[in-house]
Image (cartoon, rainbow, N blue to C red; front, side, top):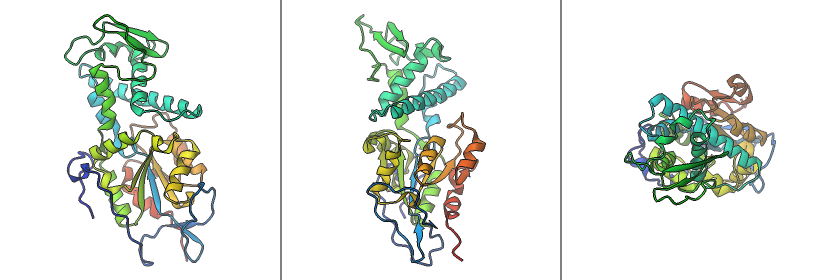
Length: 343
């Protein structure tokens, strides 16, 4: 087994992403062989035939994880990167609202069938929207972001439109380019906040669970998340989770956002797994609803930072397993429980 790091600090050997060993074949007497009845609800296009036992039982062999929120504490990193002149409670609220605005934008793009864009552009545009629209609760904080990092002004005037901050008049008095496409603003405070999404630590229950899933159950573990490959590479380094993961699937790489069915189907096809052979683990109900509709197993992980507007009683009923206060500490047992009794 590879050495690992503390999931909260993200320091040590785990920062260098070394391709993990693929678990060897499990013996018939392996205590935790995972199986499920072979009732195929949907088949990923191009996926190979599922692994079955002589009794027609389909073996669960792959676990897909959402990343930010599910495995990673995005809130601490982002709130810490926001301007220090903003009170701590206000920074926390701003971070939560920024995240919600990001999801609104992402779902809009998914519904419209738009190609995945650089996640930095999405984060930049949504931040400028929530601090730049006069009707927003955070509008009074906008001056904290329009500085050059040393307390001086980065812009002498700001153009505010229906979409939020759309342009600037710079220190030289020349008109800045519109910001609607999410390009680099040149404002150090804004860019520091955007960059914070690339530097997160893992929740402390995550790394031990990944290790147990690989070593005790012999499962292959994948990230399946919206964002860019560059983002995911940065996050496996900062979190120290890279050695416990077999592959990173981003919406950029797959060419489509979750929750579009194609995102899950393409990932399944690439690892040659059928839906009933795979488990989706996420802290987002929309993600698991889409995975379940394809026939994947689902495990919901409750995180206080995400799904703040979801009805948790409904979420509990919708999923095979709901992991609450302990986070992923119950994940090995939850996935093991998907095995039917063979007597």
